[in-house]
Length: 587
Image 1 (cartoon, rainbow, N blue to C red):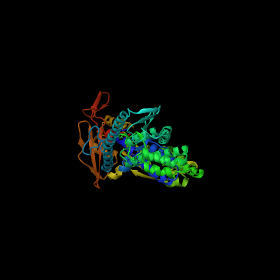
Image 2 (image 1 turned 120 degrees about the horizontal axis):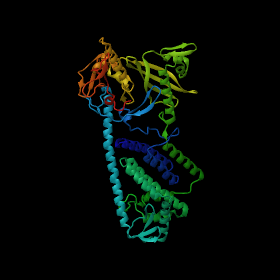
Image 3 (image 1 turned 45 degrees about the vertical axis):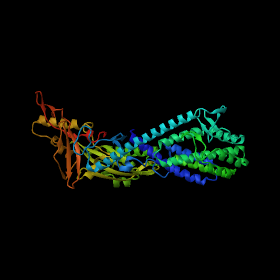
Image 4 (image 1 turned 45 degrees about the horizontal axis):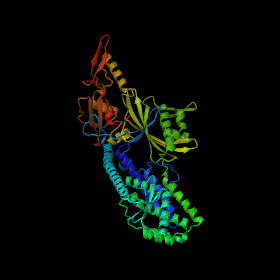
């Protein structure tokens, strides 16, 4: 994962946390007359959202937002993942970034249709922007980390003159406020010369902090703030969390020593603390602040009824649980897996041309007969299909708005003929959940065997954020074409069934079913590569990288045996799509 993806994830976490902070502030207002421990505990869900990159999804979620709102697809429309399958198999794929050169080709270039270039270009601008932002984000973290370390070491050095009153309590001249300092063995530091009653109040307060590990929580909160330093709402949350921490600690002391000493406790707080801490700028020194609001809270604090405490507890648990969970979406684990399996089974059944099995995948026989082309009832069963072309390979995408009750999918079938040749069939599938699982409720199929615009070209070959096509080498087409060529040459009658492959222009037109246009002069290089630009009648165009698969570094070669003589080297060029150039990670 590069810095751009990491920073994008952090931004999504920060945005989700901002939603939670707003919710916590609202709930704090509703709980303003309840013990501040409830408000303090509420901040745990904000801490979770700021630190944990994953969350469980559930029906009970208080989030009304997309937790991955900042994404390449949402911001640019360019999606890098799709579901790709060969007949009988399926797997998820993801495409990384790739360089595109619209004027020519080189070893790492992908040449695509103009209609798809702009989405890719916007995605690249977004990637660069978040890359720069990511490095600025890291720089901010480093600056804050260095600042924290420097001030902590400097502050620690300034405490060397403190005198021990007991094992974990020290007293020092010049301190204006008591505080807790340390991690493994935290110690309480008190201003020198405190009166006995004030000292007892202060120690009770600081011991509550130590017992609750508040000093560790503050360090964790500060570290979290360093990660999300770019979000001003997180700074606000940090200050409010500190305030709730102090007030809840004050209330814990009052509950322990008695409600009748609230005035004395307030006087001690007023005389020993100040609104502006003087702790040497150390962000993790655990001092006391916000005196005015704390005194107001102490004087108004009184014992709560059991009913009020129970209601506040229920509200706290509901808020923490609801804000910790992501909303359920169609892309969630079991639902998506079940829908992927159904669409895969359907596409495999279609490629098998199994009429009985296909009808079983529809909600009823009537719908199947309305939507499935060439479906017939024979001898109590069903049959459908073609002898040629035969759909043998497919790719599909799930609709992002699908729900657990059903949804939509788009399936691209690659239908082969024995030429060999390929035509694309695109099926739009709608399915719904029934007692027996998912069933097709509607299906329409479009034959993309005559491409007359860049828009149609994209519809046929743009799947899952990339242009894709059958790999002629991997699927055996090159071998079959060369065998046919060898047979024609041996026949010696001038027949060449594969003459369209001898030139990159005619090969591109034939392979991609391009019609109603002309090829511009083709760019060639010395490595057996070419770039074909086909301009349609509507003015749109596509650029397709091609290469001569028989090119051996000097010329196209194929050894052909004629009669009983030795093998004769001929020069039958065989131009096919250069998938490594066209789409570096296409199957």
